[in-house]
Image (tube, rainbow, N blue to C red; front, side):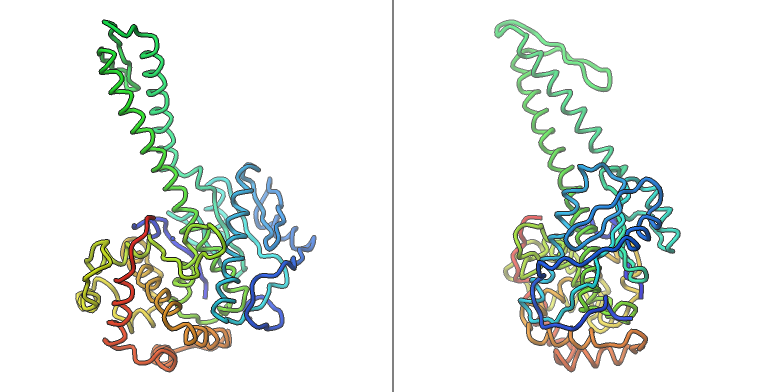
Length: 404
């Protein structure tokens, strides 16, 4: 299986076995730093291309050609994901292993470089910012600061800043009484107004500046959470032995686990009971309820399944193609997968750990039929029927929707 993600259009709709090593009991990430050899560095640099540098972190080996100032926050984010996942596994008594060497990441500065690399490893990069491939066990990203849509936001932000600065200067230079101000706009037009009118115009300019700044910050943070954190989570779960590299892991589980770690990287509790507001909002919107956590019948989820707005439970558990599409339909499936994984790990903690133990024990070359997939789920969690859906829906729809 190749685990690779996905259009940012999907993510913005609101994002052999594993590495060798002796099996351990579940635990947090230790301070032990896995090695990185000169041969590993050379191979990673060769895969990245000319002009790349190497950054060694506690758990990662990163080849990059972005500005050095971009590397430090990136490192902090991926290391946070690594630590959070091992903390999550410890809290849920999920057995893990530790990678025998540093995990590899390639961080491209521009999309064309990223796209050329993706093409070499047979990944369609159109519309994406990053992916993880279990085939070569590398996560690959490009610097979202160079995204075209973000460039437009930055252009608008700069113009808003210039306009506010011009207004402030002209107001300061105009007499308090009787003076009039001619304001020139970025499009070449101008307007003459009184000092009081100019003050009101300045207040509007500052408000627009704040909104553009917040929108820009939100755009970047959403990409970081739904791409960088998501793909890094894939990489860590496969190398921690929770999922099987090259094996037939349930797609809803693979994606649902990663989405637990799209939450803001503050503290060490990311993924441990933290609600993913982006995915919860998507799920609620799809089944047709608002942000209120009160008074929603669980039957709305069964109705949404019957009308094809979301996948019926058994289809979600078995249809891998749901997670191979792009666009709004895939965003719906991702939200549904997050909702199921969040429900199971919060309300069926022991069974969830047992289910992951069974998945991690699957031989890499063993095919799993759809009936087998259903049977294994039901052996752990009970019948995948309407009663299960109602219990699941009742829990998810009762969650308050936090700020994104």
